[in-house]
Image 1: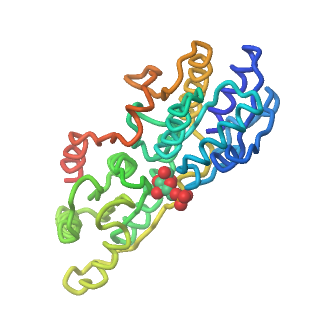
Image 2: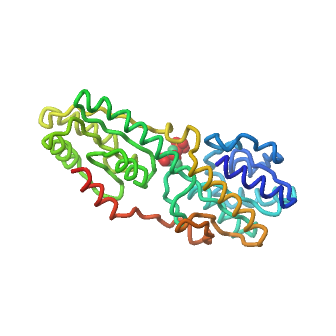
Image 3: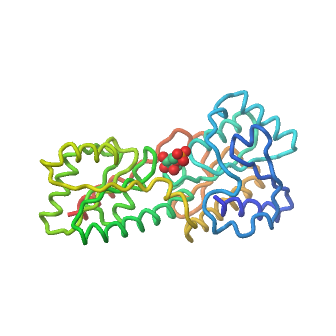
Length: 308
Ligand code: F6P
């Protein structure tokens, strides 16, 4: 997100505009918590994860009166347009502002990769690399001690992070919210891996799966004698949202941030800047919010074949 903020600030300033950063997301927008941002204020942020402005989950912004108050404050401060960097919840807020008449451009950013209107969103690649590094490290113990490990990755209700990190990490089994997988199937896949002579077995599970780390570890504990598995569980959690962004995310966020100010220049509002087919593309927010970004089921099938 910092790379996106930096690109918005520097491209806007180069157009002769003034930029205000909104602190703490919609909570800050609703109370006018703004800071002026010039070129030097974003120096050095491109290599830092997260957001220099801070972010909050703000249920109050779902209320019409909060949205109206935010617009009133923006107008009082003579703000002409806003750029909203975030995922589905943030873009729902952006759409609400736009529908109430305030000019907004969205930038697609979430590690979940569940946003319609972008093949890939800011943060996904870095989160995947963090998950992959963890899986590779866990594999060392899994192999030397001949143990089964379960690694839970984030992603809310979307299995993208689990699928991609599972494929890249050579998981024996991947458990996704999109595919009903009962615990007996996981146990069968693990047993089959050992029977094929594998020294280790890794299950990558999405936090949003029906049987996530908790559900699966409960099941394996309850049936440990019958299953004969000592399943160790690692939940990566917020570790995946930390760390320095990689090249892909820095460049993606830079391109999207620059495209957002270009869109403002052209007077094109109510759209989300995303990446479609390798190019930055604008999709109306009304088509984005609440829509799904389905998993590529061919990759799900491929993962099952590769795990053999
Ligand atoms: O949407 C991004 C995400 O990291 C999800 O993958 C995860 O479920 C959620 O946010 C965690 O939210 P919080 O940091 O508010 O607990």
